[in-house]
Structure formats: structure tokens, C-alpha cells
Length: 95
Image 1 (cartoon, rainbow, N blue to C red):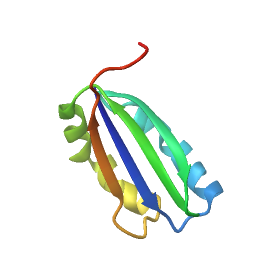
Image 2: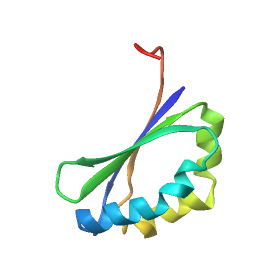
Image 3: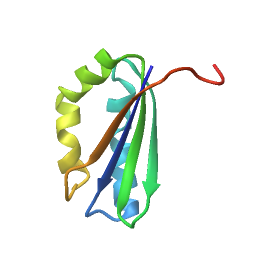
Image 4: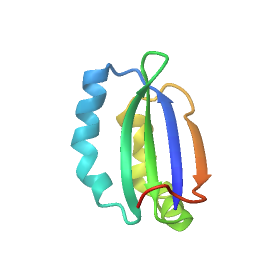
């Protein structure tokens, strides 16, 4: 299992960003290998993120090469390069 944490800064206000995320939700639900995605608000203001739980590194890499992934900066009016971390899960407490 792989966890990907994406932190981005947006020109959108929270309400508009949330509306766009909801509109795109069906596309994310359809991604093969994406087990879960958490949409989060971070500090400082106008900083948001996604915490993705992937079944494998291959699924993550396929998503990264997709048109949906490429559309994220424009959809959320990202103002600078996002901070992306990829973590390998060693074990989980609960299943």
C-alpha cells in the first residue's frame, strides 16, 4: 500500500475549491487502484491537499500519467508547484 500526500496553494476560495472537488469526485472514484482519497485544508490560508491511499506504486504511477492528474493545476488554480510526498506503508494498525 502507498500513501501519497499532495499539498497545494490555490487562488480559489474554500467554497469554490470544494465545489470543484465535488464536481470531479466521480472521476476520482473511477481511478483503478485508488482505495481512498481525503480532501484536506491546511495552513497557511488557501492551502489544501489530498491524501491518497493506493493499492500499489503501479496504480499511483498510472494516475500520474493520466489526463485527470494533468488537469489538477488548472482545475484548482494552483499558484506554485505542489509539495508531493510518497510513502510506503510498512504495516497498518487496523484493517
